[in-house]
Image 1 (cartoon, rainbow, N blue to C red):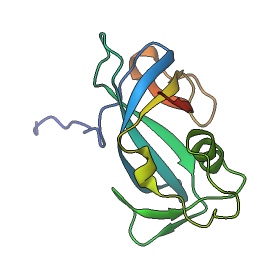
Image 2: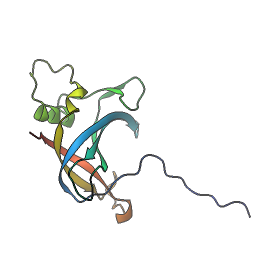
Image 3: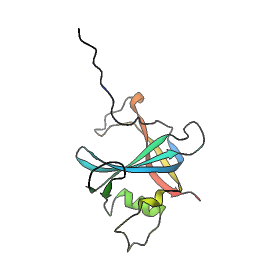
Image 4: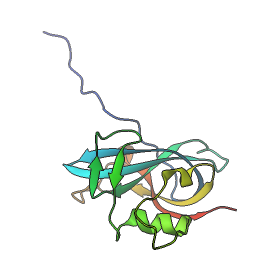
Length: 145
């Protein structure tokens, strides 16, 4: 008999924390193509003191287009009716006449309150086993004073 074969897991481990509101610190953004669709990931670290301090949680957005190679710090375009623009303007009010560029640097050096939820169903709406469930930022609510 040959050596035993194993499936290896790709990507970063995903954290599971109780749903609720947490104080978050922006780490970085990355772009990816998932199921041949452009996606934007914003990665945050939980800075609310407790058992989940410094756990990393993503916020996912759809993008209309990726510019150049996908990856950490990748360039992208988002739609004018999308969640990214709406949340950006909620967090960082900007002049509506100057919406051609949204600086990612605005996320740096601020504390953002985010609503975290547990992903319990896959993209096909089938239940995910409890051991494979994970947390995501469902909504960025406000910048904390």
